[in-house]
Length: 116
Image 1 (tube, rainbow, N blue to C red):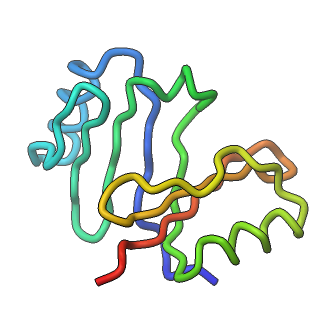
Image 2 (image 1 turned 90 degrees about the vertical axis):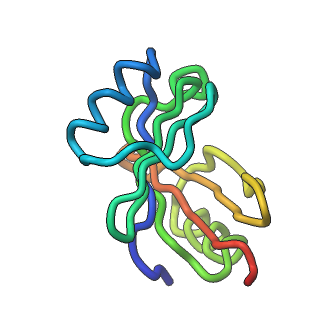
């Protein structure tokens, strides 16, 4: 079902100090640096900082797993007992995300790359 972990998004209260911390940790500048999101690439992974995450109900980091068919994967997770958190949405250029919570309360994100 999954092609591996792609992104981890952290909810942050103050974007500037969060960016400073992740610059120090990762040793790179953010590739995306907007008031609504900062993203760092390291190897094949992305670390995202969302200053609106707490307002969206995020209680901690959310891992996003790469899937080839996000709607099918979301349906399978819901059928397996997951609770929906965020329906499929386009976050730009055809890239799709969705999220669920497992039975233990852990968030699980799904990520589908934009068509080539």
